[in-house]
Amino acid sequence: MLKVESSILTAQLQMGGGLERWAERHLRFLMLAPTVLILLGLTIFPSVYMFYAAVHKISPNPDLPWEFVGAGNFLRLLSDAQFHVALRNTIVFTVAAVVTEFLLGLGLALLLDKFIRRLTFLKTVLMIPMMLPPIAVAITWKLIYEPQFGVLNEIMFRLGLPLQAWAGDVNLAMFSIIVADVWQWTPFIFLLMLAGLASLPVEPYEAAALDGASSWQQFWDLTLPFLKPVIAIALLLRVMDALRLFDLVFILTGGGPADRTKVLSLYIYQVAYRFADPGYAAAMSLFVLFVTIILSTWFMKRMRLAE
Image (cartoon, rainbow, N blue to C red; front, side, top):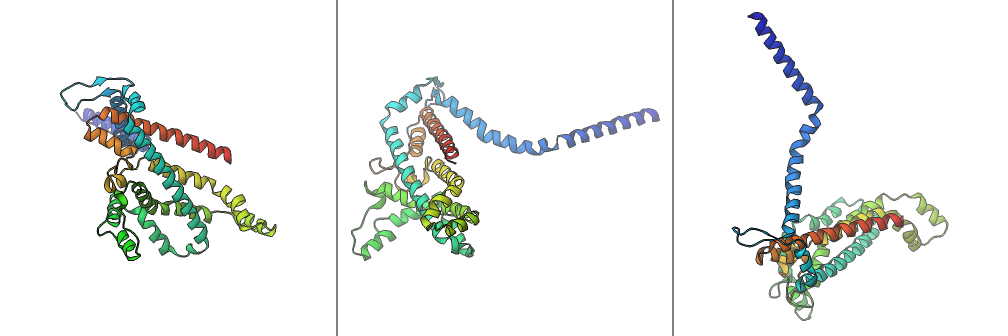
């Protein structure tokens, strides 16, 4: 009896030791498993579902089966006038906003490079707009643009200038959205450029100064080439973010007036939830995804060739 109990205890110890050794060998995988499962659930499943929905016509009636249409939803993009309007507005916004933010951010970084390193408080203040939630930014600018009691029209009135319906004017609506986006994201470009300037080597500038190079020559021949990696990252991140603009347009204008500010993200939302056509909305989302990937790849290749 004692021998049997001893053998059972030995087997249990050996089994426990084997489990401990197995756990030690695979500990890194066990620790990563919950995170990997969450990421798979948040990325892989929605992506597969979107691809599947993009090739089907989905009825608002959940009792009706999905109808396979193949490339039909993608072919609709060629003849959809509203999609063309949204695409044009998205391109206009992206180019105008990103170029303005880059020029302002780089200019401010160059202007304040020698002074702001000591002013930590000023850098914190400049970070506030980009740290605010997009909804809060949109509501703030909606109040600023309010025709009746908005602060902007109050300033215009005190200066003796004509009042404007900023977000409600056909000619000013897109400009108003661009201004709000520039206010929020110029600090992002500014901080990246400032960090890039702080990392530049001093020796080339000293040698250029001894050779009689002007400030403009130093900027063009030294600063810009040194900053190319930082510029590439900043522009790429801002372009990718601008292509999926939604919050500002949804709150400020709702795509109006006369579809002047209807962008792709807003149109996709309208098609999916207002017009109850999620299959076509999924096809447009994939189009935006493919365009973003193509632009990112092309941009990074161009930057590497330019080095």
